[in-house]
Amino acid sequence: MSNYSWTSIKEYEDIRFEYFEGIAKITICRPKVLNAFRPETNIEMIDAMDIAREMNEVGVVVLTGDGDVAFCSGGDQNVKGVGGYIGKDGIPRLNVLDLQKRIRSLPKPVIAMVNGYAIGGGHVLHVVCDLTIAAEHAKFGQTGPKV
Image 1 (cartoon, rainbow, N blue to C red):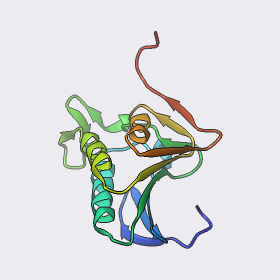
Image 2 (image 1 turned 180 degrees about the vertical axis):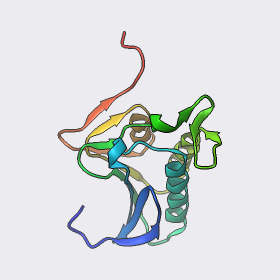
Image 3 (image 1 turned 135 degrees about the vertical axis):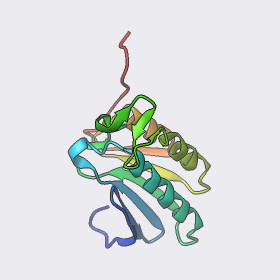
Image 4 (image 1 turned 120 degrees about the vertical axis):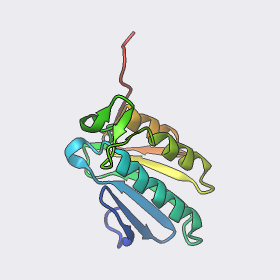
């Protein structure tokens, strides 16, 4: 999908939001932390989902991660606090749940393009999408105890 002439829909800090011939593409752009999300990332993705929902020319939304190492490694542990993930405003949040609900309620198909690791919250992110397309080197997993 990189050989197409994508048009930016809106500029964000943590994501790229682009359009091409009926496809809205949301790319998590935090490769230094394996595309882990923080509160701001989730807020941006929710906003992009809302815009895609209202765009008549969009028939499908593709969710992916920047680079070929990771789709998403879950929540950014560098900003994890006791009550959730700490945003720039200092307030702990678990707003990835709001993003997951937004994906499930979108009346257009959401396709996860998994191009590497999908771990923890990143694994859940692809599961709540309508369809997952995985690269041959994709790796899926959950954190927690191994039994």
